[in-house]
Amino acid sequence: MIQRQRNLNDVFFSVLVATMVAGWAGLPQAIAGTGSAISAPTSIDTQQPQVAVEPLPANLYVLAGENFEFKWSLTEDNPSSLVGSNVAEVWIGDQLQSSHPFSPGIGAHTWLWTAPDTTSASVHLVVNSSDTFGNTTALATANFTVLSSVTHVPEAARAAIFALPAPNPFNPMTKLSFDLPQSGLVTVTVHDARGYRVSTLYSGQQPAGPLALRWDGRDSGGRRQAGGTYFFRLEFQYQGRQEQIIHKAVLLP
Image (tube, rainbow, N blue to C red; front, side, top):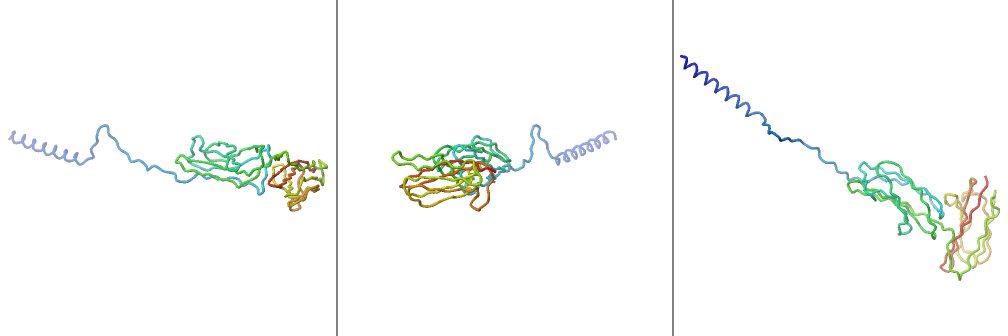
């Protein structure tokens, strides 16, 4: 009887162990030293940096040696910090005149640029920006003009004579006197201290000899201008040559 009980106990124990092993086999198995996880997909930016440049005024003229402030803004969540990735450039014709690196990221930017004392030329600003994914934006402004103080002419040619404005300072009117060596195309304009053209006093063919003009302190629309410094520009074209002379005077309030 005792031996039979022991046999029954052994059978019961064997069944219990078999049942537990079977249960363990259905559980997930862990491997020592091994782990796994699901990673989020990598986000790729395909959008170009957003650049906004403050528009330049129409008929903008900047005088040689004068300062002019360019303004623009940049919006980019993944800016590149590599050298040359964010730079503003001034081009004279197809030649790079100067460049200005700026900080990447979101924000407003300015550049106080000094116009070179060169012959009068057409100029434009280009703002370049790249992000870390290689997306690039290059935004250019409309052309504007840099005026030289004097454009030289061959020594054999007699230069035009442009007398200083008189009176100076003045209010409400000043006189401008010219003496042209020969007939040609003449343009006389007035610009404020920022270089913006205020008025065109004369534009057309003019015979050789004296020319007298007056400015009454008003713009082309007849609006009275504020007191301050103004620039008078003579452009004279003849026989394929060109002269440009600039004088300044002060309009009293």
